[in-house]
Length: 142
Image (cartoon, rainbow, N blue to C red; front, side, top):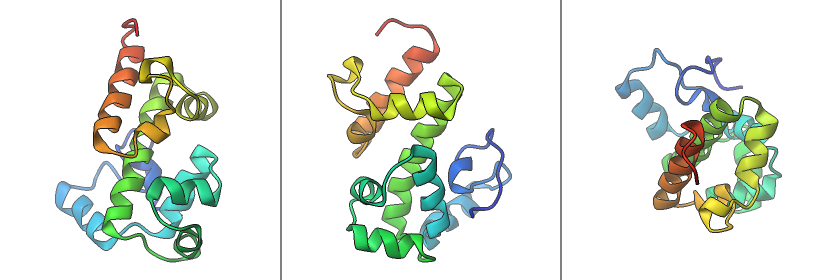
């Protein structure tokens, strides 16, 4: 399992801790997150191994190896962190993992009928999903 972190720490779902400074956090990315971090996010999002592999843009076989004690590459770790942060933000807004998951995995009118997890495969999409979540959090009409 990733190190225990508190839900108030940014990146808690991949094992980052509020006490980590920027240098320590970047070292974690450079070393690559452990497969346990990927498994934790996969479970939070209730994704199959194939679905998680698609989000990280790796083959299902590679994903399976990573989950069985392997390490993600720095690029895969960055992708995982992107989805973990969106989950954390959605959880903060919707209050339960189930509601956060449902929103992230369902087509959203505010995203042109696209699924947030799919939109977030690239940085411009991440920003748009965050913008929509921010609008929801502040009660701004979509």
